[in-house]
Image 1: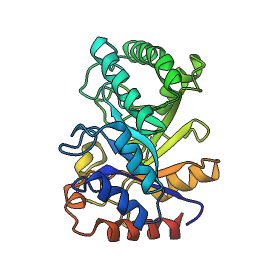
Image 2: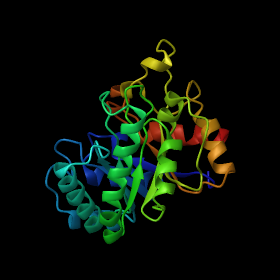
Image 3: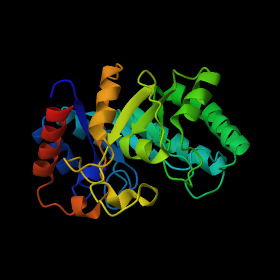
Length: 270
């Protein structure tokens, strides 16, 4: 298992308090976690100060690899700038390494010219903010057909064009990679991999959505094992972070046991 660096996103077990979530990571021998700003009644949304989150992570010997996420990052406006400043400040103050950047996903901004302009404008505005705080922006293309940024190739080209590799990395999400039908991987530019599987045999790829995303097992349809092998053999050495959204995963009474089984499956097959 040493070749795979697993991490936990709080979406693995959103009903757990932050401390219980950190404790679960410890139990699994995992030292890297992602915290979220979209879980009601939990840090960050419950008003927990960044310093408190940082102290708690230190107590459990954990690295906070990201805050997930600044939504609609490529729809740059005054409100987004304020939201970004707040999240980047929180990331800095809690000791997080990065902020995940999620694109507009409502069917707007999909025209090629608009896509590029919006992406470049957002990256240009975010770069000095991220650089000043020493935080990395993790751009996460979403594979859904309605998304304004589906392609990692497009994101990588914009980052390169701006010479902004110091500030940005890509998220390779195994679910979104499969949905986008994208074959290219960017191991050198990838800062984080999100892993989740789809086992439901009845759903078409075009109809796959977040609630289908379970822990990776032998009936996975997304070829997580193949994607992970490809990334590792191409030199990716970063974390593989569990990010399941399925309600039945969230309802598990023993999430640690289920995560342990998934980790063992991947370790044996990757």
